[in-house]
Length: 367
Image (tube, rainbow, N blue to C red; front, side, top):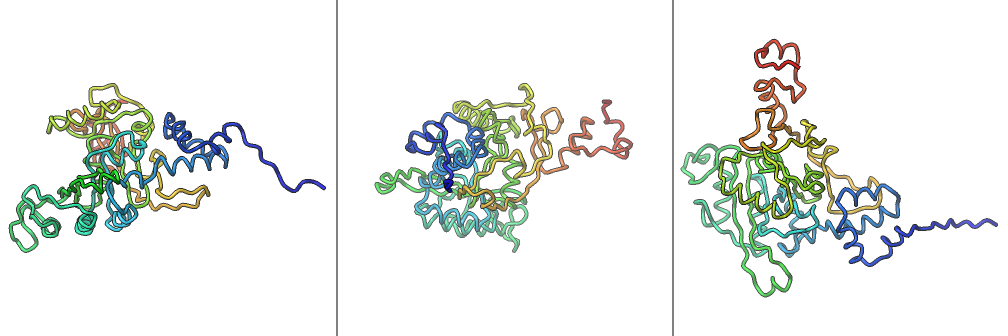
């Protein structure tokens, strides 16, 4: 009678990954880039299982936030309810497997999430630290910001010092002073910047962050990187904002990231050709985006993520629309590509037509 059981033999590599202690596996994979690790998932089910086990430790959302909060899952739920994101150094380091630990945690929320998130931070032991002429009481400061419409007046026409213009933002600082209990728990995260923006925080990040290297964010359910290969494989950051404004701050962040091993690329550096940058028409969640869900699964298709498909353009300095000193211009679709067409005659947005040529013939460049 034939044996009804099929014996599956493991390769030496599979036995190593599946049978070695976690610290050994972690040290082994620490020399691999993220794309190399994730590519193993596609080889077979044994390697998929091994990679998922490592991923659950390396990209643990609890590891990212347990130095900041007692109740990480509660924070993620509030972040999701507020439609907010965590961006900045902590989001980058979540992907980078915590090479460095930042001093600040940057939380971006739309106006309707400001009050709820601030109150939750206070419940975790953080204290509101007023700045910029805001009211000394957080709830009052939050209401005054959200009620402001145009200039320095609220809906009732009353003066509100420091209120934002439309599409602006405001930072609300929260601090927590170290205690013996916090030190015992290695909870050294002491400063949170809660940044309220007019509208969706994701377009705000794309339109306003200083470089591609920090265009990573964490939601309540997953983490996203918009330029992952350049940031985490090639270790390159492309400047996206005006370098002539606030020169001291620009020198500071450039020095910080160069010290961490990144190459910072500006307008005068040699132009880099890559799929992430050539694809002027980008969308959050496209094939160039990396998404790391907080929940892991070894069952294909088991996890379903609802990722808002925010569209944006990526145009090089040669387009004529990048800010002074910037290597790239990122922004809403069609806006800057239209400007580039008029400025240089280059059809970065593939929007050319006989009517465009007839209307802007004096700008056209022969090809």
